Image 1 (tube, chains in turn purple, orange):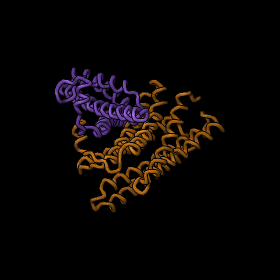
Image 2 (cartoon, rainbow over the protein chains, first blue to last red):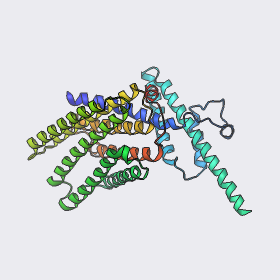
Image 3 (cartoon, rainbow over the protein chains, first blue to last red):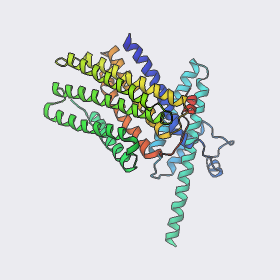
Image 4 (cartoon, chains in turn yellow, cyan):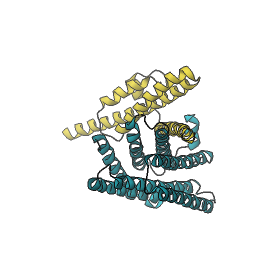
Length: 136
Length: 233
C-alpha cells in the first residue's frame, strides 16, 4: 500500500518537474522577438509562430550546419515537442483542455526554434562576410 | 555482468560530475554553490571506489553490494544537505536562516540515525527487499523535501534562474528514482532491465542538467518560478 502511494506521488511529481523543467529551459528565448528576415525565409503566416511551424524551422536549422551551443538544446526541444504532440493527441481524447495546453507548449518550441534559426543565420552571415573580407 | 550501456552510463556520469566541479570552480561560483561542487566531487570519488571494488571483487560480490548500498545512502544524505543549502538560498532575504538550520540539523540527524539503525539491523544480511524498500523511502524523503522547496519558491516568487534549474533537476532525479524503487517494490518480477537501468539513467541526468545549468544559465539570469508553475498546469 505504501509502495503504491509512493509510486503514484513520485510519478506525479516526476511529470510535473519534467514539464516545468522544459518550460524553464525554453524561457530564455520567450521574450526574443522574431525578425522579419526569419519570417520571410520560413514563409511564416501571421505575426506569431504556429505550433506546426516547428518541423519546418527544424529543417532550416539543420541546413545551417554550425557548431554552436544550441545543438544539444535543439535535440532536447525536438524530443519535448514530439512528446507534447503525443500527450496532446492522447490526452485530448480523455481530458478536455489537454490539447490546448499541448498546443501552447508546441508553440513555445516553435518560438525557440525560430530564435535558434535567427542566431544561426546571423552567424552564417558573419562567417561569409569575414571570409569574403579575407579573400579581398 | 556489466554491459556496454552500463559502462557508457558510468563513464558519462563520472565525466559530467567532474565537469560540474570544474565549472563551479572556474566560474567563481564556489562560494555560492560549494555544497553542489562537494556533492559532485564525492559522487565522482565514490565512482572510482566502485570501479576498484568491481575490478578486485567482481560486480556480484557481497563486498560490491555493500559498498554500493553504503555509498548510495551516504551520497543521498549528502544530497539532503545540498537541498538545505538551496532552502537557505531561496529564503536568504527572509530572516529564517536559524530555523532552517535547526530544522535541517534535526532532519539530517534523524535520517542518518534511521539509516544507521536500519543498516546495523540488516548489516549481516542486506537482502534485496530491504535495499529496495530503504532506497524507496530515502528517495521519497528527497521528493517531499524538493517539492516543498519548489512550492515555497513558487509562493515567494523566486526569480533566480540558476537556482530554479538546479532545484527542478533535483526534483526530476529524486522523483524518477523514488518511482523506480517503488515500482520495483510493487512488481519485483517485471522487466529487470528497467530496474537495472532507470536509477543510473536518472543518476546521469542530474549531473547532465547541472552541467547545463552552470554552463548555459548565467548567474544573473532571471525567470519567474510562479509563471513556470502556472504554465506547466
